[in-house]
Length: 272
Image (cartoon, rainbow, N blue to C red; front, top):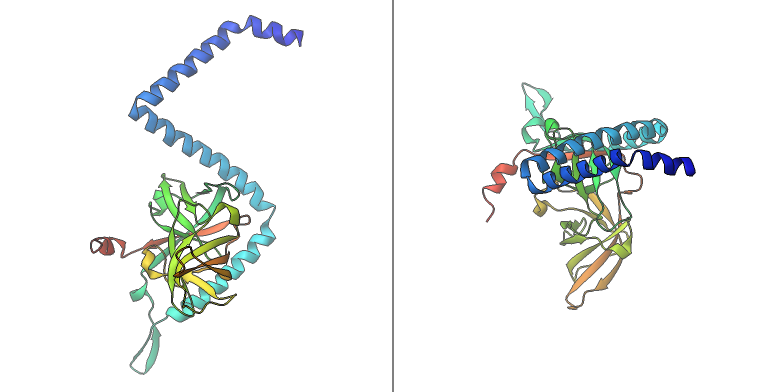
């Protein structure tokens, strides 16, 4: 301890210089927009690279589990592709053409940093604008809806997950088509959320599937959200609030897809 105090005393001028230098840089960053933007972009890039390196080591230790997840994802995508194929009979032969109706494109990415037990949860992905990702795009995982992109840099992106109270989406009951608002609440944890504003006369049973609704203009229709656990009347006594068990387990989320809508610009021109 005595030697440490002696070292600090000998180097006090050097440490004072570092402190003043840090204060000067902080004042420049806070007061000048250009320097602040450069600092934020540089910090995000280096932090993303560090997180990606850490994630690579973690993924190496879980290769078997990741392969199982990818196998299930491939099976689901194959089923969707089979449904989307367009058959045309020409010259007595049957041909397959699904490209003419491909409105949505999936951009694969990995989660390199995330939180699921806080109030304002987040996700950091290892793909950015150079891969075609833009703010406002939807994010899905192997089992269903994940969230929406909110910030993008050239090589990385951050997303607001559906377990963040600041994100509100629409969803519908698969078998009855009644739709409502999806919203999480801190007391529900990271595996449950609410589906509100369902008419009280709607028939809803435990285990009913809830999927994405085309009204969201973010996700393709039919992406799994969760299943119904319970239902209660809202305070106005006219609508139901459903408690859902989410399809996505954010504590185990590794691989995601960012959804690019090729018709988003055309839709934006028609919105009020």
